[in-house]
Amino acid sequence: MQTRHETEVVVIGGGVVGCSIAFWLAKRGKDVILVDMNAPGTGTSVACSGLIGGTFKFPNFYMELSIRSAYMYPKMVEELGEEIGLRQDRGFLSLCLTEETYKEYSSLREEHLKSPVYRGRMMAPREVWEIQPGVSREIVGAHYNPDDGDCEVLRLMYVLIRACQRVGVRMLRDAAVTGFALGGDNRVEGVVINHDYLIRAPNAVNAAGVWATEVAKMVGVTIDLYPDRGQLLITEPAPMICPTPMNSLKQVRTGHFHIGTVHELVGFDVSVTPTASARMTKNAIKSVPIIADLAVIRQFSGLRGMTRDGIPCLGAVSRVPGYYIAAGHSGITLAPVHGKVISDLIVDGRTDLPIDEYDPLRFERKNGSQS
Amino acid sequence: MEDDLLICRCEEVTRSEVEEAIRMGLRTVNEIKRFTRAGFGLCQGKTCGRLICDILIREADMAPSEVLPGTSRPPVRPIPTRVLANRVSKEDE
Ligand SMILES: Cc1cc2nc3c(=O)[nH]c(=O)nc-3n(C[C@H](O)[C@H](O)[C@H](O)COP(=O)(O)OP(=O)(O)OC[C@H]3O[C@@H](n4cnc5c(N)ncnc54)[C@H](O)[C@@H]3O)c2cc1C
Ligand code: FES
Image (cartoon, rainbow over the protein chains, first blue to last red):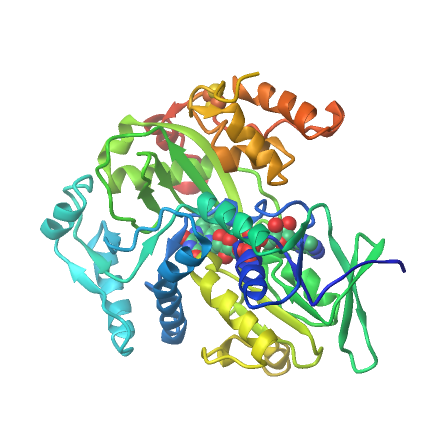
């Protein structure tokens, strides 16, 4: 097969995760080619809510890593050199519309309290209305986490793409990885593009989002990431009455409400449904009644890449030297961590961040004993 | 054509912003929409979509058949949330 390019690292997937990794690698002196089967910025990263945080992510180590990543955001934005609409000064609300939800969130909070990192608390309705005037008078209360926030994902995506271009990452579109060239000891020697040509490289990073399962299979690794469809609605703009991001509902700088979301196991189908829009608008109106007077201008969907244990995959694949995986849910929150960990592993051969629990090979080990 | 010519009236996106997107390597109406916001306005690209296709054909040197129109997302016209919320199907109740 013809070799068309040579480089030190091929990053597979131009979402927020792949671009963050490519950026940090290039910044630290590596020659990087990023390939995407469509184009950078066309996957799940442009169809999601953009919340950055750790609330109700379990086990606690996952919440802790998420919060750590949130704390890395301001520095990353500085390095990227452009604003991404980061909102980290208002905290994050999870509203309780019923006593039942209040009890549920309180007990989740008890579990989080076992971690020294967690600073969330329950809030009485009056306090919620003070920081979020648009919220319904019917609420029972809320969970509030001062460490969580959000950003504008489309901005984040294109600021990352631009920053990658600035630090010399070569980006190839319409370039699907279809296989790998492995050496005698199973070591990565190159990446096959479109069944057609080879990019020669000693390192490959699988950052293919929900499609990472396929790209792992190409080197004989099973990671079991599966698609979990979410849908989102965008309303016409309204005066700012909800400046604090909330779970499944936020008002962005331009005044539009982003209304989420559902979990649907329908494979890779990205269509949108009236059943979902009915359910989502009903809940949104209960949370913020004024939404009833607004019109929806757009509905779209995105595919989360979920794992059975809910935790992303992050790390080197020991069996295939030179092969790394960074994929799974909450890629917006974890983009700085993904970028640091993979660049640490490739540049220094090790990382300080605690990633043992994220080992991509854990599914193969579990397959023997469980499921 | 002038650089500050408005391509998308709803979101006030100029021709030079669309050209910048093309210089960055974006080659579809959807990508240009996400980068510039042209097409995200109340009319959801009904007015500007065609213009952006034309600019792609000229500036990015693409054949008309290669330029895909942007994805049309529902609803076709803005629908009050009230109306959507009441379209509850049987399976929900
Ligand atoms: C409705 C919804 C709401 C969400 N809300 C949040 C949130 O609030 N906070 C949060 O942190 N996360 C959220 N997420 C999750 C988050 O969007 C994802 O975890 C994140 O976008 C994943 O980024 P990524 O770069 O891994 O994947 P993607 O953005 O999907 O990028 C992967 C890229 O890989 C490319 N690719 C795939 N296969 C190949 C191949 N063989 N060869 C070449 N390229 C390939 C694809 O074309 C794609 O562009 C949400 C997701 C959804 C669906
Ligand atoms: S003119 Fe561009 S969205 Fe209306």
